[in-house]
Length: 142
Image (tube, rainbow, N blue to C red; front, top):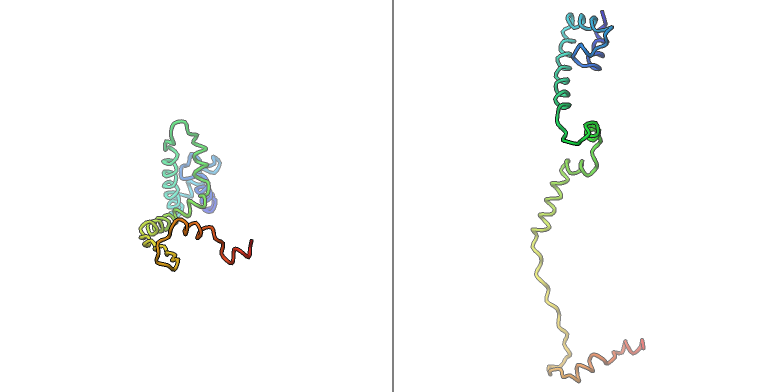
């Protein structure tokens, strides 16, 4: 007869199906299961896990898809942006976008007008001299 610790190891390693257990220890584990209710409980839990894994293994991954590659992809750690999006970052980004888009824009500020100091209308000659006459500051540069 095998000890309960070894029976637990076998259940953890090989599952609940006795056909997968090592042949030389199979009968001893079956005898241990008959006499130990805690081992029977562990076997029932292992059977549930076996059923779940069996269901997952039977899923169709699609035509032309390598099942081994698909399983390896599932087991890869999530990329940082996926963890961020799954952790609520996507919700925060969406809220920020709504606030930015939904915020009204301020009214345009009127442009200040420059006064020449005279109320007389500006003539073509006056406009020419205003544009092309240098200021005292500009004269110092020239």
